[in-house]
Length: 106
Image (cartoon, rainbow, N blue to C red):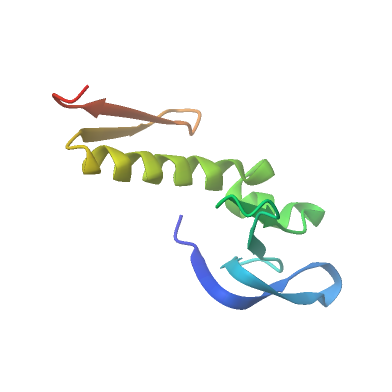
């Protein structure tokens, strides 16, 4: 997706509002995505952005769909490699990604 993740950066929102966030996914449009640790402190993170006028959805998909899909694929591929498995990735006509794992460990 060619997105840039910046630590401790300014996150741009509607009306020129800017706030600091622990991590920021910088986008080409007028808004960015803040990436912040979940309040539960369980190691998960939350995403916050301004969805106004579809600027963010154009870059990462509605509801972060494309971004989360690419993250899931990358995480699965990394885990598969660590277990000695091969992966094959195929982009379907609808844009979804089919990931196949192969190896003796299955």
